[in-house]
Amino acid sequence: MSFEIEWHIWHASRESYAGAEYGPAALESTNWLITEPAAVEGVPGLWALTGDGGIRGSDLGAEGASVTLRGRDTIRLGRRELRVFDRQGTVGLRVFNPQRPQRQRFSAIDAYPPRAHWRVPAVFEPALDEQITVTAVDGVQHQAALAGRLRFELDGIRLTLATTRGAQGALSAVFADGTNGLETYRFRFLPIDEPAPDGTAVIDFNRAYLPPCAFSDQFVCPLPPDENRFSVPIRAGERAVVLGR
Image (tube, rainbow, N blue to C red; front, side):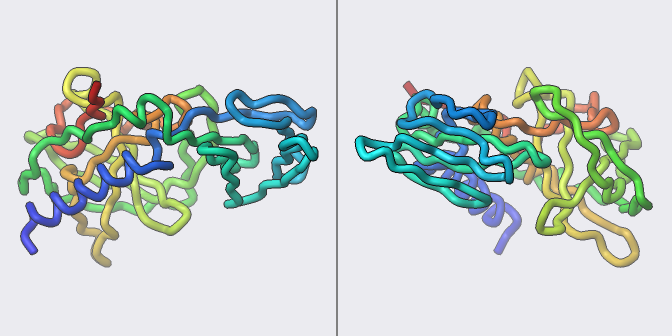
């Protein structure tokens, strides 16, 4: 399968995921609850933290039904789907609504055409017990383990990309570049294929993708660290969400 065909299959899957009935464009609200029951807009009942990592909903319907959500539990009340969101031990309630206007207007993800020259050779240098400060779009910070740095060149300029590992162990990065705010969203995410044993790697900027907060401002995405903010334009990967009328 050619490089271009693989990219188009990936891009089609991204658009399908983004516009799915309960995909990222459907996120209506993220609610930071307390232990005292309170109403959540658009959702019946009263909702509160249980104090041990769960969320309890009470007075759900005429018979006063209740439910407790933990971990990956979800519940649908009408068309809305409720999910538990755990951010470094702080628990919130997320409400997904397929009838959210931005989800109904979602049309496509604009992207640059795939170009082989944006598959950039790099050298991976593992980090040794180094932490990095991760700042979310709402200003909340936490420390995360730095997996390592990728050293590479663009237009003769030597650059460094800091990477972390997700829950499944895969390398990824958050970066900003000279196209942000003009041609692309304010920053983008980038998966990184595992480097070879000798440290050689390839950074495929064609696979740069929009963070969830590009589809809904109710996501709390991590911002790029300072060393991943480049002035050079990277015209590869996803650009912006396209909304129809």
